[in-house]
Image 1 (cartoon, rainbow, N blue to C red):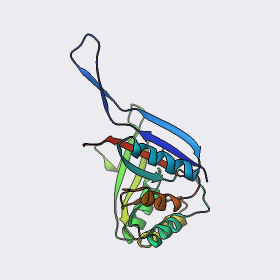
Image 2 (cartoon, rainbow, N blue to C red):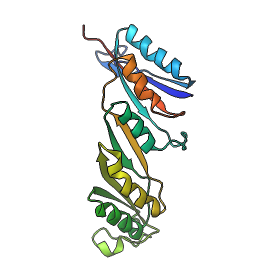
Image 3 (tube, rainbow, N blue to C red):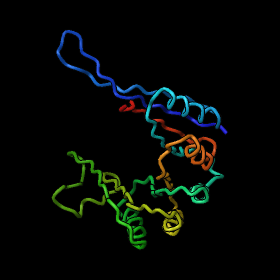
Image 4 (cartoon, rainbow, N blue to C red):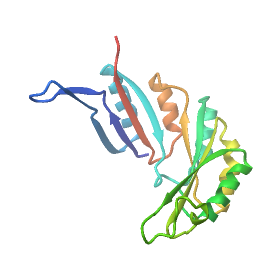
Length: 208
């Protein structure tokens, strides 16, 4: 398996030249095409250097689509690792498409947020004071963001499939709740994810 690693180092303060002020920076490093063992070695190496390491594992859009988020969640559950699953969807469209999507989300008893982007100029028919003008597809774009999370991914399955039926491509982000306090814990989490997963190591200086 090949994984991508992003490392975020602790914050550093640097004094600005000729000024009695400081600039805070946070170095980041990217490394791709790492094997399972290389990722574990990197995690262990950061711990040996004295860092407190927080891990986040995410699936980019181009990741292996043969492994569904439902399968990943099942692997975590089998390993005794709790998680939080959050449904997300990229969308932008007309008032009509937004209403259809919003009503679908509402049917499954989840909250949602509707964002409206209006193009207002001297040629635009949109008038901020008249809601009836907010539906012109050439000048107004709607975006619907569901607030759908669960600790059991199967609770999201109905909504996931309903959104797919509307022609969208929903995704589900899965965040393990169990902290990676040891290499064994992290190895168990990592093994649940397919090739292409992105691992973020956030480093903090130890307090002792």
